[in-house]
Image 1 (spheres, rainbow, N blue to C red):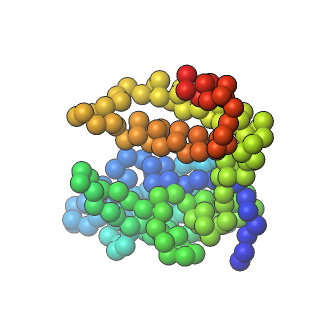
Image 2: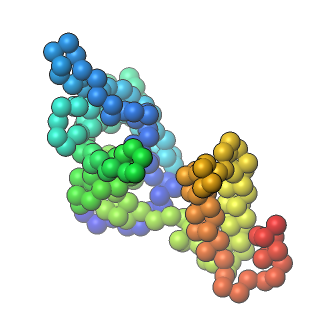
Length: 201
């Protein structure tokens, strides 16, 4: 099914961190059989929200998250069910997990649900784009979008407890700098001098 373009900001985003820290740490029962993990949480995106009870079969390979997608906790309707596979990637320190999009088979750290849809897929399959890619770079709204975005990122930077660790930027600090660079890429190639001065201060 081909989708028209829609903003990511108006869609629901599902991340591995939504399942909590250590959500794939294995626990065993008295017979040394891995216990399934269960839980529930709510996600909101745009004008839509979903309630997600889930179960993870820890003895399966590859691991799979079985979701029940509901509009509200006490919804009497039969829930929409979706199975999402998980891939593990070994890093220098620890490991990282990715979702496998059931539509294309590629791995992503996030999956999305469009407002009119009932399943999670990757943004490529759902034809989702960031608002920043739709903005006229030379318009007044484009300038305002950049300045508001920079203010939000600066506020987040001010809340960071650690900027450096072992002489290197922390992951959170590096991620904020990357977002700044991406945001400043919206600016016209030859903006007015006053605009450059506001950005640099």
